[in-house]
Image 1: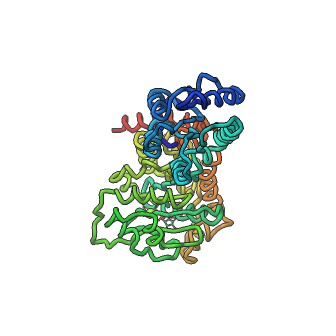
Image 2 (image 1 turned 90 degrees about the vertical axis):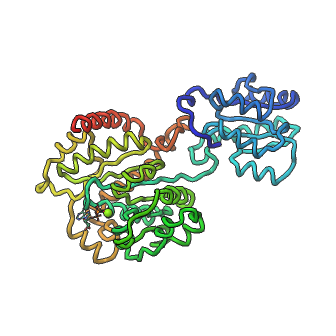
Image 3 (image 1 turned 45 degrees about the horizontal axis):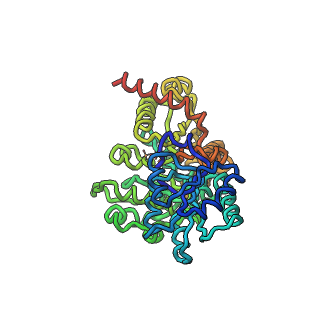
Length: 431
Ligand SMILES: Nc1ncnc2c1ncn2[C@@H]1O[C@H](COP(=O)(O)OP(=O)(O)OP(=O)(O)O)[C@@H](O)[C@H]1O
Ligand SMILES: [Mg+2]
Protein backbone atom coordinates (compact mmCIF):
# COMPACT_ATOMS: atom_id res chain seq x y z
CA UNK A 1 0.00 0.00 0.00
CA UNK A 2 1.27 3.40 -0.81
CA UNK A 3 -0.78 6.12 0.81
CA UNK A 4 0.73 9.47 1.77
CA UNK A 5 2.86 9.25 4.85
CA UNK A 6 1.10 10.34 8.02
CA UNK A 7 3.77 12.02 10.12
CA UNK A 8 4.22 10.88 13.64
CA UNK A 9 2.16 7.77 13.35
CA UNK A 10 4.70 5.08 12.61
CA UNK A 11 5.91 5.02 16.20
CA UNK A 12 2.58 3.66 17.38
CA UNK A 13 2.03 1.01 14.74
CA UNK A 14 0.58 -2.31 15.74
CA UNK A 15 2.18 -5.41 14.37
CA UNK A 16 -1.09 -6.80 13.13
CA UNK A 17 -4.78 -6.09 12.72
CA UNK A 18 -7.52 -8.02 10.97
CA UNK A 19 -11.05 -7.13 9.89
CA UNK A 20 -12.99 -10.28 9.05
CA UNK A 21 -16.70 -10.43 8.32
CA UNK A 22 -17.67 -13.74 9.93
CA UNK A 23 -17.08 -15.38 13.30
CA UNK A 24 -15.97 -18.66 11.74
CA UNK A 25 -13.00 -16.98 10.03
CA UNK A 26 -12.10 -15.06 13.19
CA UNK A 27 -12.13 -18.32 15.13
CA UNK A 28 -9.61 -19.83 12.73
CA UNK A 29 -7.45 -16.69 12.72
CA UNK A 30 -7.30 -15.99 16.47
CA UNK A 31 -5.09 -18.98 17.49
CA UNK A 32 -2.77 -18.38 14.54
CA UNK A 33 -2.39 -14.73 15.56
CA UNK A 34 -1.56 -15.78 19.13
CA UNK A 35 0.94 -18.29 17.79
CA UNK A 36 2.65 -15.49 15.85
CA UNK A 37 2.85 -13.35 18.99
CA UNK A 38 0.05 -10.94 18.12
CA UNK A 39 -2.80 -9.74 20.31
CA UNK A 40 -5.99 -11.76 19.65
CA UNK A 41 -8.14 -8.66 20.21
CA UNK A 42 -6.66 -7.23 17.02
CA UNK A 43 -8.81 -9.74 15.12
CA UNK A 44 -11.82 -7.47 14.60
CA UNK A 45 -15.25 -8.30 13.32
CA UNK A 46 -15.98 -6.29 10.17
CA UNK A 47 -14.90 -5.94 6.58
CA UNK A 48 -12.99 -3.58 4.38
CA UNK A 49 -15.24 -0.64 5.23
CA UNK A 50 -14.51 -1.01 8.95
CA UNK A 51 -10.80 -1.24 8.19
CA UNK A 52 -10.90 2.01 6.20
CA UNK A 53 -12.89 3.77 8.92
CA UNK A 54 -10.59 2.63 11.65
CA UNK A 55 -7.34 3.32 9.79
CA UNK A 56 -8.42 6.82 8.88
CA UNK A 57 -8.08 7.75 12.54
CA UNK A 58 -5.34 5.40 13.76
CA UNK A 59 -1.90 4.34 12.58
CA UNK A 60 -1.82 1.42 10.15
CA UNK A 61 -0.52 -1.89 11.43
CA UNK A 62 2.53 -3.53 9.90
CA UNK A 63 0.38 -6.36 8.58
CA UNK A 64 -3.29 -5.88 7.80
CA UNK A 65 -5.80 -8.57 6.96
CA UNK A 66 -9.05 -7.42 5.37
CA UNK A 67 -12.14 -9.27 4.32
CA UNK A 68 -13.54 -8.29 0.92
CA UNK A 69 -16.64 -10.54 1.21
CA UNK A 70 -19.06 -7.67 1.78
CA UNK A 71 -17.46 -5.39 -0.76
CA UNK A 72 -19.40 -4.83 -3.99
CA UNK A 73 -16.40 -3.44 -5.87
CA UNK A 74 -13.29 -4.85 -4.18
CA UNK A 75 -10.78 -3.11 -6.45
CA UNK A 76 -12.31 0.28 -5.93
CA UNK A 77 -12.59 -0.28 -2.20
CA UNK A 78 -8.96 -1.36 -2.05
CA UNK A 79 -8.05 2.01 -3.53
CA UNK A 80 -9.98 3.60 -0.68
CA UNK A 81 -7.90 1.55 1.71
CA UNK A 82 -4.70 2.71 0.01
CA UNK A 83 -5.67 6.28 0.84
CA UNK A 84 -5.67 5.66 4.58
CA UNK A 85 -3.01 2.98 4.78
CA UNK A 86 0.57 4.02 5.40
CA UNK A 87 3.41 3.05 3.07
CA UNK A 88 4.92 -0.30 3.92
CA UNK A 89 1.79 -1.91 5.35
CA UNK A 90 1.50 -5.45 4.05
CA UNK A 91 -2.12 -6.16 3.18
CA UNK A 92 -3.47 -9.70 3.02
CA UNK A 93 -6.98 -9.81 1.57
CA UNK A 94 -9.56 -12.49 2.23
CA UNK A 95 -12.64 -13.18 0.12
CA UNK A 96 -15.00 -15.72 -1.29
CA UNK A 97 -14.72 -14.91 -5.00
CA UNK A 98 -12.59 -17.47 -6.77
CA UNK A 99 -11.56 -15.46 -9.81
CA UNK A 100 -8.01 -15.36 -11.08
CA UNK A 101 -8.57 -11.98 -12.74
CA UNK A 102 -9.61 -10.44 -9.44
CA UNK A 103 -6.59 -12.05 -7.80
CA UNK A 104 -4.26 -10.57 -10.40
CA UNK A 105 -5.85 -7.13 -10.15
CA UNK A 106 -5.57 -7.18 -6.38
CA UNK A 107 -1.91 -8.16 -6.51
CA UNK A 108 -1.30 -5.43 -9.10
CA UNK A 109 -2.91 -2.86 -6.81
CA UNK A 110 -0.39 -3.64 -4.09
CA UNK A 111 -2.13 -6.39 -2.11
CA UNK A 112 0.37 -8.93 -0.82
CA UNK A 113 -1.88 -12.00 -0.99
CA UNK A 114 -5.49 -13.04 -1.46
CA UNK A 115 -6.86 -15.96 0.54
CA UNK A 116 -10.01 -17.78 -0.37
CA UNK A 117 -12.63 -18.62 2.25
CA UNK A 118 -13.19 -20.89 4.12
CA UNK A 119 -9.88 -20.18 5.82
CA UNK A 120 -7.66 -22.89 7.24
CA UNK A 121 -5.03 -22.47 9.95
CA UNK A 122 -2.24 -23.75 7.73
CA UNK A 123 -3.11 -21.39 4.90
CA UNK A 124 -3.34 -18.42 7.31
CA UNK A 125 -0.07 -19.29 9.04
CA UNK A 126 1.81 -19.56 5.74
CA UNK A 127 0.40 -16.31 4.36
CA UNK A 128 1.02 -14.34 7.55
CA UNK A 129 4.53 -15.68 8.04
CA UNK A 130 5.32 -14.70 4.49
CA UNK A 131 3.85 -11.25 5.09
CA UNK A 132 6.06 -10.94 8.19
CA UNK A 133 9.12 -11.85 6.15
CA UNK A 134 8.25 -9.30 3.49
CA UNK A 135 7.66 -6.61 6.10
CA UNK A 136 11.01 -7.30 7.75
CA UNK A 137 12.85 -7.29 4.42
CA UNK A 138 14.38 -4.08 3.03
CA UNK A 139 11.85 -1.54 1.85
CA UNK A 140 12.32 -2.30 -1.82
CA UNK A 141 10.39 -5.53 -1.30
CA UNK A 142 8.21 -4.35 1.53
CA UNK A 143 6.63 -1.64 -0.55
CA UNK A 144 5.33 -4.10 -3.08
CA UNK A 145 8.35 -4.96 -5.19
CA UNK A 146 8.82 -1.45 -6.61
CA UNK A 147 12.45 -0.80 -7.43
CA UNK A 148 14.37 1.97 -5.80
CA UNK A 149 14.90 5.07 -7.86
CA UNK A 150 17.22 7.93 -7.03
CA UNK A 151 16.82 11.30 -8.68
CA UNK A 152 19.91 13.46 -8.39
CA UNK A 153 19.91 17.12 -9.38
CA UNK A 154 23.26 18.76 -10.04
CA UNK A 155 23.12 22.50 -9.43
CA UNK A 156 26.02 24.90 -9.93
CA UNK A 157 26.12 27.76 -7.45
CA UNK A 158 27.78 29.95 -10.10
CA UNK A 159 28.10 29.80 -13.87
CA UNK A 160 30.89 27.59 -15.13
CA UNK A 161 31.66 25.86 -11.83
CA UNK A 162 31.34 22.48 -13.53
CA UNK A 163 27.73 21.44 -12.89
CA UNK A 164 27.33 19.93 -16.35
CA UNK A 165 30.69 18.17 -16.19
CA UNK A 166 29.66 16.53 -12.93
CA UNK A 167 26.13 15.70 -14.10
CA UNK A 168 27.28 13.89 -17.25
CA UNK A 169 30.06 12.13 -15.36
CA UNK A 170 27.69 10.90 -12.66
CA UNK A 171 25.24 9.64 -15.26
CA UNK A 172 28.04 7.83 -17.02
CA UNK A 173 29.35 6.29 -13.76
CA UNK A 174 25.89 5.07 -12.74
CA UNK A 175 25.33 3.52 -16.15
CA UNK A 176 28.75 1.99 -16.74
CA UNK A 177 30.37 1.29 -13.38
CA UNK A 178 27.18 0.46 -11.50
CA UNK A 179 25.31 -0.81 -14.59
CA UNK A 180 22.13 0.94 -13.49
CA UNK A 181 19.59 2.06 -16.08
CA UNK A 182 20.13 5.82 -16.02
CA UNK A 183 18.46 8.87 -17.52
CA UNK A 184 20.31 12.14 -17.98
CA UNK A 185 18.00 15.13 -18.28
CA UNK A 186 19.79 18.25 -19.41
CA UNK A 187 17.62 21.21 -18.45
CA UNK A 188 20.00 23.78 -19.84
CA UNK A 189 17.60 24.07 -22.74
CA UNK A 190 19.56 26.52 -24.88
CA UNK A 191 23.16 25.98 -23.90
CA UNK A 192 23.26 22.44 -22.54
CA UNK A 193 26.36 20.32 -23.05
CA UNK A 194 25.07 16.93 -21.87
CA UNK A 195 24.80 15.49 -25.39
CA UNK A 196 27.96 17.24 -26.54
CA UNK A 197 29.99 15.72 -23.71
CA UNK A 198 28.79 12.27 -24.81
CA UNK A 199 29.53 13.06 -28.46
CA UNK A 200 25.85 12.88 -29.40
CA UNK A 201 23.33 15.06 -31.20
CA UNK A 202 20.63 16.24 -28.77
CA UNK A 203 17.73 15.49 -31.13
CA UNK A 204 14.25 16.97 -30.72
CA UNK A 205 13.09 14.90 -27.75
CA UNK A 206 13.16 17.53 -25.05
CA UNK A 207 11.81 20.23 -27.35
CA UNK A 208 8.88 17.95 -28.25
CA UNK A 209 8.28 17.19 -24.59
CA UNK A 210 8.16 20.90 -23.71
CA UNK A 211 5.80 21.64 -26.59
CA UNK A 212 3.46 18.70 -25.87
CA UNK A 213 3.64 17.70 -22.22
CA UNK A 214 0.50 15.58 -22.59
CA UNK A 215 2.35 13.27 -24.98
CA UNK A 216 4.92 12.27 -22.37
CA UNK A 217 4.57 8.62 -21.47
CA UNK A 218 6.70 5.49 -21.42
CA UNK A 219 6.60 5.11 -25.18
CA UNK A 220 7.50 8.75 -25.75
CA UNK A 221 10.50 8.37 -23.44
CA UNK A 222 11.65 5.31 -25.36
CA UNK A 223 11.44 7.11 -28.68
CA UNK A 224 12.61 10.55 -27.70
CA UNK A 225 15.68 9.76 -25.65
CA UNK A 226 19.07 9.39 -27.23
CA UNK A 227 20.93 6.28 -26.17
CA UNK A 228 24.52 6.85 -25.04
CA UNK A 229 25.26 3.28 -23.96
CA UNK A 230 23.33 0.16 -22.96
CA UNK A 231 22.28 1.73 -19.68
CA UNK A 232 22.33 5.43 -20.38
CA UNK A 233 19.81 7.55 -22.25
CA UNK A 234 19.81 11.31 -22.50
CA UNK A 235 17.13 13.89 -23.09
CA UNK A 236 18.38 17.31 -24.01
CA UNK A 237 17.93 20.18 -26.43
CA UNK A 238 19.90 22.81 -28.21
CA UNK A 239 17.03 25.25 -28.50
CA UNK A 240 17.59 28.12 -30.96
CA UNK A 241 18.83 31.22 -29.20
CA UNK A 242 15.98 33.27 -30.66
CA UNK A 243 13.29 31.05 -29.13
CA UNK A 244 12.57 31.77 -25.48
CA UNK A 245 11.56 28.95 -23.18
CA UNK A 246 7.75 28.92 -23.09
CA UNK A 247 6.56 26.40 -20.53
CA UNK A 248 4.95 26.20 -17.14
CA UNK A 249 7.34 23.38 -16.22
CA UNK A 250 4.67 20.66 -16.32
CA UNK A 251 6.67 18.75 -18.94
CA UNK A 252 9.71 18.58 -16.67
CA UNK A 253 7.77 17.21 -13.71
CA UNK A 254 6.09 14.69 -16.00
CA UNK A 255 9.46 13.62 -17.35
CA UNK A 256 10.80 13.13 -13.84
CA UNK A 257 7.79 10.93 -13.11
CA UNK A 258 8.27 8.82 -16.26
CA UNK A 259 11.97 8.43 -15.53
CA UNK A 260 11.14 7.13 -12.08
CA UNK A 261 9.18 4.34 -13.73
CA UNK A 262 11.60 3.56 -16.55
CA UNK A 263 15.05 3.94 -14.95
CA UNK A 264 16.81 3.36 -11.66
CA UNK A 265 18.78 6.58 -11.66
CA UNK A 266 17.91 10.03 -12.96
CA UNK A 267 20.52 12.74 -13.16
CA UNK A 268 19.27 16.26 -13.85
CA UNK A 269 21.62 18.98 -14.98
CA UNK A 270 19.68 21.79 -13.34
CA UNK A 271 20.78 25.35 -14.06
CA UNK A 272 20.03 27.59 -11.06
CA UNK A 273 17.65 29.81 -13.00
CA UNK A 274 15.48 26.74 -13.70
CA UNK A 275 15.20 26.17 -9.98
CA UNK A 276 13.93 29.72 -9.56
CA UNK A 277 11.40 29.45 -12.37
CA UNK A 278 10.28 25.89 -11.67
CA UNK A 279 10.76 25.14 -7.97
CA UNK A 280 8.39 22.17 -8.38
CA UNK A 281 11.25 20.40 -10.16
CA UNK A 282 12.82 19.75 -6.78
CA UNK A 283 9.68 18.23 -5.31
CA UNK A 284 10.79 14.64 -5.81
CA UNK A 285 14.53 14.99 -6.01
CA UNK A 286 16.40 12.79 -3.54
CA UNK A 287 19.94 14.11 -3.78
CA UNK A 288 21.22 17.55 -4.75
CA UNK A 289 24.85 17.84 -5.75
CA UNK A 290 25.53 21.50 -5.08
CA UNK A 291 28.63 22.49 -7.00
CA UNK A 292 30.73 25.30 -5.61
CA UNK A 293 34.10 26.97 -6.06
CA UNK A 294 36.21 28.88 -3.56
CA UNK A 295 34.97 32.36 -4.36
CA UNK A 296 33.09 34.89 -2.31
CA UNK A 297 30.17 34.88 -4.74
CA UNK A 298 29.96 31.10 -4.63
CA UNK A 299 29.98 31.13 -0.83
CA UNK A 300 27.12 33.62 -0.81
CA UNK A 301 25.10 31.62 -3.29
CA UNK A 302 25.85 28.31 -1.57
CA UNK A 303 24.38 29.79 1.61
CA UNK A 304 21.32 31.03 -0.28
CA UNK A 305 20.79 27.78 -2.14
CA UNK A 306 21.22 25.64 0.99
CA UNK A 307 18.68 27.82 2.70
CA UNK A 308 16.31 27.59 -0.24
CA UNK A 309 16.60 23.81 -0.40
CA UNK A 310 16.01 23.52 3.32
CA UNK A 311 12.81 25.52 3.00
CA UNK A 312 11.52 24.25 -0.33
CA UNK A 313 12.85 20.73 -0.78
CA UNK A 314 13.53 19.46 2.74
CA UNK A 315 13.50 15.84 1.56
CA UNK A 316 16.68 16.28 -0.45
CA UNK A 317 20.05 15.20 0.79
CA UNK A 318 22.60 17.80 -0.22
CA UNK A 319 26.16 16.91 -1.18
CA UNK A 320 28.22 20.10 -1.18
CA UNK A 321 30.84 19.55 -3.86
CA UNK A 322 33.82 21.79 -4.37
CA UNK A 323 35.05 21.67 -7.95
CA UNK A 324 38.16 22.97 -9.69
CA UNK A 325 40.12 23.28 -6.48
CA UNK A 326 43.40 25.12 -6.96
CA UNK A 327 44.33 25.97 -3.42
CA UNK A 328 46.95 28.54 -4.41
CA UNK A 329 44.49 30.45 -6.59
CA UNK A 330 41.46 30.32 -4.31
CA UNK A 331 39.77 33.62 -3.50
CA UNK A 332 39.02 32.33 -0.02
CA UNK A 333 40.39 29.35 1.87
CA UNK A 334 38.48 26.10 2.14
CA UNK A 335 38.25 26.54 5.92
CA UNK A 336 36.81 30.05 5.57
CA UNK A 337 34.41 28.83 2.92
CA UNK A 338 33.16 26.03 5.15
CA UNK A 339 32.85 28.43 8.08
CA UNK A 340 30.79 30.84 6.01
CA UNK A 341 28.43 28.20 4.62
CA UNK A 342 28.28 26.61 8.08
CA UNK A 343 28.61 23.08 6.82
CA UNK A 344 31.42 20.93 5.57
CA UNK A 345 32.26 20.27 1.96
CA UNK A 346 31.39 16.64 1.19
CA UNK A 347 33.60 16.05 -1.84
CA UNK A 348 36.44 18.04 -3.41
CA UNK A 349 37.41 17.73 -7.07
CA UNK A 350 40.77 19.22 -7.98
CA UNK A 351 41.25 21.52 -10.95
CA UNK A 352 42.61 19.38 -13.78
CA UNK A 353 42.96 21.21 -17.05
CA UNK A 354 44.55 18.26 -18.80
CA UNK A 355 41.67 16.01 -17.83
CA UNK A 356 39.11 18.55 -19.04
CA UNK A 357 40.78 18.91 -22.41
CA UNK A 358 41.25 15.15 -22.69
CA UNK A 359 37.52 14.61 -22.18
CA UNK A 360 36.72 17.21 -24.84
CA UNK A 361 39.17 15.66 -27.30
CA UNK A 362 37.84 12.15 -26.80
CA UNK A 363 34.18 13.16 -26.82
CA UNK A 364 33.75 11.38 -23.51
CA UNK A 365 32.53 12.46 -20.10
CA UNK A 366 35.18 13.79 -17.72
CA UNK A 367 34.88 10.67 -15.54
CA UNK A 368 35.24 8.26 -18.46
CA UNK A 369 38.13 9.96 -20.17
CA UNK A 370 40.28 10.30 -17.07
CA UNK A 371 39.72 7.23 -14.98
CA UNK A 372 43.06 7.23 -13.20
CA UNK A 373 43.03 10.90 -12.15
CA UNK A 374 42.25 12.25 -8.69
CA UNK A 375 39.42 14.28 -10.20
CA UNK A 376 37.74 11.12 -11.52
CA UNK A 377 38.23 9.41 -8.15
CA UNK A 378 36.39 12.32 -6.53
CA UNK A 379 33.58 11.94 -9.06
CA UNK A 380 33.35 8.23 -8.22
CA UNK A 381 33.17 9.27 -4.56
CA UNK A 382 30.09 11.40 -5.32
CA UNK A 383 28.53 8.53 -7.30
CA UNK A 384 29.17 6.15 -4.41
CA UNK A 385 27.64 8.58 -1.92
CA UNK A 386 24.51 8.89 -4.04
CA UNK A 387 24.23 5.13 -4.53
CA UNK A 388 25.21 4.40 -0.94
CA UNK A 389 22.22 6.40 0.07
CA UNK A 390 19.94 3.64 -1.17
CA UNK A 391 22.00 0.86 0.40
CA UNK A 392 21.93 2.63 3.77
CA UNK A 393 18.21 2.44 3.58
CA UNK A 394 18.25 -1.32 3.88
CA UNK A 395 19.97 -0.93 7.22
CA UNK A 396 17.33 1.45 8.48
CA UNK A 397 14.55 -0.44 10.14
CA UNK A 398 11.48 -1.11 8.06
CA UNK A 399 9.42 0.92 10.50
CA UNK A 400 11.18 4.17 9.68
CA UNK A 401 10.10 4.21 6.07
CA UNK A 402 8.80 7.73 5.96
CA UNK A 403 10.26 8.75 2.61
CA UNK A 404 13.40 8.57 0.59
CA UNK A 405 14.90 10.67 3.35
CA UNK A 406 15.25 7.32 5.07
CA UNK A 407 17.86 6.44 2.47
CA UNK A 408 20.41 8.56 4.21
CA UNK A 409 22.29 8.47 7.38
CA UNK A 410 19.77 10.33 9.45
CA UNK A 411 22.28 11.07 12.19
CA UNK A 412 24.52 12.83 9.74
CA UNK A 413 21.58 14.85 8.51
CA UNK A 414 20.56 16.18 11.88
CA UNK A 415 23.43 18.62 12.49
CA UNK A 416 23.06 19.68 8.87
CA UNK A 417 19.52 20.75 9.56
CA UNK A 418 20.76 22.92 12.39
CA UNK A 419 23.41 24.30 10.17
CA UNK A 420 20.93 25.05 7.45
CA UNK A 421 18.95 27.01 9.99
CA UNK A 422 22.08 28.98 10.76
CA UNK A 423 22.60 29.50 7.04
CA UNK A 424 19.07 30.78 6.88
CA UNK A 425 19.82 33.21 9.63
CA UNK A 426 22.99 34.27 7.85
CA UNK A 427 21.07 34.94 4.66
CA UNK A 428 18.41 36.86 6.53
CA UNK A 429 21.09 38.86 8.32
CA UNK A 430 22.73 39.62 4.99
CA UNK A 431 19.44 40.83 3.48
N1 LIG B 1 37.72 19.83 -12.23
C1 LIG B 1 37.88 20.51 -13.34
N2 LIG B 1 39.12 20.84 -13.75
C2 LIG B 1 39.30 21.54 -14.89
N3 LIG B 1 38.31 21.95 -15.68
C3 LIG B 1 37.07 21.65 -15.33
C4 LIG B 1 36.77 20.90 -14.15
N4 LIG B 1 35.44 20.76 -14.06
C5 LIG B 1 34.91 21.36 -15.13
N5 LIG B 1 35.88 21.90 -15.89
C6 LIG B 1 35.72 22.66 -17.14
O1 LIG B 1 35.03 23.85 -16.81
C7 LIG B 1 34.23 24.27 -17.91
C8 LIG B 1 32.83 24.55 -17.43
O2 LIG B 1 32.28 23.33 -17.00
P1 LIG B 1 30.72 23.03 -17.09
O3 LIG B 1 30.20 23.37 -18.43
O4 LIG B 1 30.56 21.68 -16.58
O5 LIG B 1 30.20 24.09 -16.04
P2 LIG B 1 28.71 24.50 -15.74
O6 LIG B 1 28.66 24.81 -14.29
O7 LIG B 1 27.79 23.49 -16.25
O8 LIG B 1 28.59 25.81 -16.62
P3 LIG B 1 27.25 26.61 -17.02
O9 LIG B 1 27.08 27.63 -15.95
O10 LIG B 1 27.57 27.20 -18.36
O11 LIG B 1 26.15 25.62 -17.06
C9 LIG B 1 34.31 23.16 -18.93
O12 LIG B 1 35.21 23.53 -19.92
C10 LIG B 1 34.85 21.98 -18.15
O13 LIG B 1 35.61 21.11 -18.95
MG1 LIG C 1 26.08 23.67 -17.37
